[in-house]
Length: 127
Image: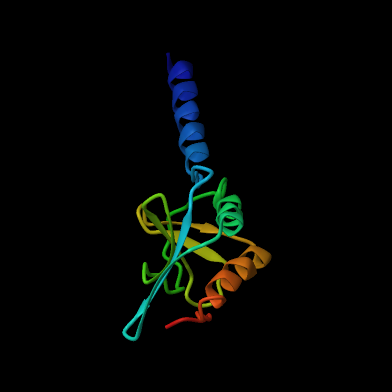
């Protein structure tokens, strides 16, 4: 009985760990959002750019934490009604605003996301 309980709890733990991954449906359009007192940008990324963002995000491990980087929906990428906020400094962290969880991206992936924002005049670090 004890052994069965340990196996059951282990399976639940494995399921929880595996389930904590970013999962964005493919073929979604990504909306770039940037708001400050003087600017209000809502721009749809191209199909190729959207696919790239989803490719970067999907499968990343989500975790709870309290990184010191600044995050906000004012600077975010919206996919299928959910907001994903890149760190406003140069950290390679994205916040899933709906869950309050975070995930890491590589420096090269961060550069791609910054390029998409730069096309609309948004630079990092942002305020």
